[in-house]
Length: 442
Image (cartoon, rainbow, N blue to C red; front, side, top):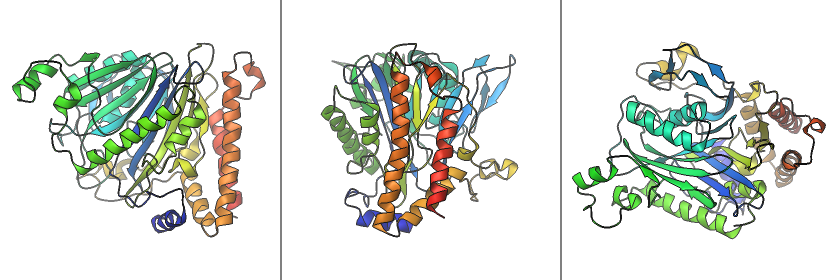
């Protein structure tokens, strides 16, 4: 599959930067009015990981938990909350947390890897992806989610390997959090953190610190910087400048270019940002935002639209498959009947799972779910001829256009939802996509 993907990129004029060896990285975007065309908040994220990693989409309903109960995260067991909200997660299939997701209250969160002057640790602690899920399960607003993450960070710390590989790969995290009314950027450096509040306009984050003047911060953020000799305590405090590495690793330098490209893409359509234009940003290959290199690629993508009007449902669209430029965004709505979709769930290996072995990740297992397998197969089949590839692309966009049409209908305040079949919306969309791929590979 990798070789065929490379051959595809070599012959595709729209993928002029596909051979660049981008680092493992991600990008997150948010648009609030007046940057959004309508009174909605739009969230978007690409999850860029090792290209063979599988990402699944899971739904967990709200739940009540016995007092004193525990929850096992990826590496660490912590105190469980008395109640947890219903959540939708897009996650690497081997871990407990999530790269991105949403909850029933209209909160969306995505995280990015970051390296700062604070050293990373390999000990078992909470992954940034665990913090994403924990915040979604426990917070009714984006501001509450900031508080949940910072409190968990103080109590349990962050650390542990973030890849399903024998060689540990560790980093700290930045987060983009939003709800129907506002957004926050939360950036961490070990136990320290700084948060920025966003009430209008567009914002993006990549694998670097970008908060300049914190809205809120760790109580010892500045005194620690003074003690380390990073800041003299005089003049205006700039979190990004003080805590960023003076000599950036290659992956951070590449992130700077991607961060700037993301800013420029948002600025070009400021005041006109829609669900469709957010998808186009996530599909942009020339910037590296839609990643496709020998070792890494965009393994899953998500776009959410969060209307200001509380009577309109929040709608979340997910690919569940790699490379958004060759995938279909499918809608999910919490407000109606929801079932877990089996075709986007990876196999369960129990005690044979490499994450449960000691030492971890010494073996490999096939985590591909059914949609992933058929998506991979149809792409290979279509690459035989340019006509076949174009035909598949057209049919994928026709499916997605149906999904976007439904999203627009849901956002119309005068539209009665009874006239739209919403029961198991995401399940039906995945079913249609699977049927397309099976027909195309016959």
